Length: 269
Image (cartoon, rainbow, N blue to C red; front, top):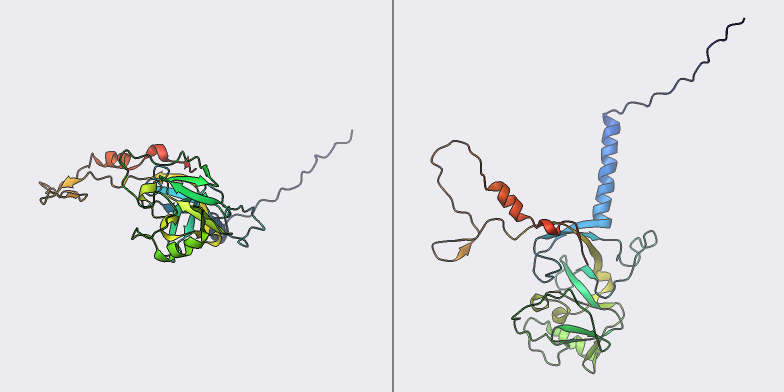
């Protein structure tokens, strides 16, 4: 009987070992992808004022989508872009202060006939459902709770905006021109918005918020009275009896109380 020689298996090629250069290139690629995402797709921002309460609170950190509402020509041929919609929250460049960005809610789009009565929006004569408005028991008086106004009275209102608005007003309604949007804060009694400085151009709108990824209270240090009787958020300096190291048992509690845990990863609407 003839002995059968064993089958020879092909030799498997061992993958090349990753050296420091390959690791560096991989890290660089990851950094470039992250930089592209932060620059062009998502970007973290923080809410600085109460004008969008209760939807957005002071200390909310947001991720905003910079592609969804990108102006025409900004990669819209590659990624599907959409037009801003009524009741959508948007971030936009301030026309009054170049380099600054604001966040408000769109309440009227091009072609809408807008009127505000007692802080409530009416579009084409019909009331706009606004469940997001902040309710106040004793709201402060506001000269722009009704809009548009026929006389210039509120000193915070831009006089040039008031003048340019007059030709757009017919029958007590403001008709929005093409490419223009009217934005308001949800905390309507404490918001400087389109009523005060004018319409937002389509090319000013750059992003829409997606979610709240972190929310911090204004201060994790309780207010304490100083000798003058005025409130201050500066901690009192307590002299240590010696130089021995110890543990600040209140530090974990301060960290815990500083974060609004229930707001983390909340979708913005």
